[in-house]
Image 1 (cartoon, one colour):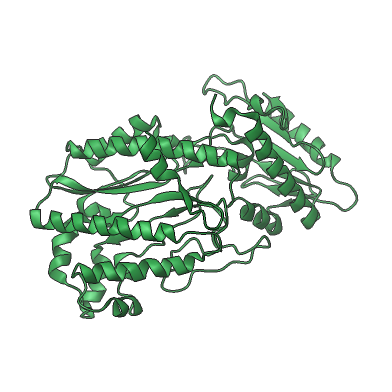
Image 2: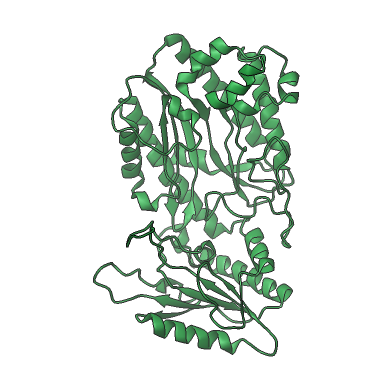
Length: 454
């Protein structure tokens, strides 16, 4: 029996959800929340489309990656939720089975006929329309269930998104499992790269070791050799092994019952074009690992991630100066934003049901936000850190020609000969997923724990 099978974890998870969702109903004045899973969407002029991904809030309730289309959940005060689950008779596709193991936590009604489901849903919703009360309906493309339903009211969505940042122990258990599954894939990918595999071969090695199909991945694998590592979300995979094997940057995660891991590792290749360049790149890898360790040590409840973003750039300035990539002081490099082209992305983000989980820039339950300051426009996490958040910590160092071109034109104090020596390696990113523990207790590093275990 796994930890997620234990009734105590499930019971605590649903008690937390029910209590919070009832408090949202109380504060917003709605009589119920109706949650739609959504339905499959097709490509333009086609009868096929991307893999169906349900409403993330439905995933939080069902803790399941496979949720059928057209499912609906009704949550109200003082009683267990009702799940209307569509399980059609179908010989074209395998029907998604209803989550009957959750029947002690919700009333589950299964329908083969979609019209019958919708009729019963209307009856259920109408029961909760007393006086002037309305129902909050959260769904993507659906019409209102009744004319008293309010589609996607912001005050409800803000509250639900804000709550998702802090994980229950049940959710943390799923995320630990996703970390272990991802770590197995990463170890296989590293071995494939060391043996000279292509980007595509490395990708296949990851899939096999992590026991996932393409559509099960929480996001498309980034498998970037050599200069491809300078493209932050590189999306292609060369089928043939590269003539040079300078470096590999692999950003790949796993999905367990709808909860994700998000892991990045960078390696020096087995066939570098230059021994001198390989030695320099390897030294940078060591510095970047120390750099990440220091940033993780600063992750604590109450910390401001904008301050950590600035600390990342201050530390990166020291690395660039110490390794002679910059010919100025570290203070000058930071003050003139000379580090930004070398790391144009944010230090990290919330992680959970979605890889870039919602609410990262949300300051409170009402939905007030804190946009990231210039020059850190890509930072997705600006709210204060709190216990039981799971976040990524992913500093990087890249040699991106289009960003450095502007600095070259401005005669920035950059050692261009070293940049050119290292450009064929693309860049470095190291990413771990960490859970915040109580103040003074540090973090639980889900990623490193997983690598140590598998």
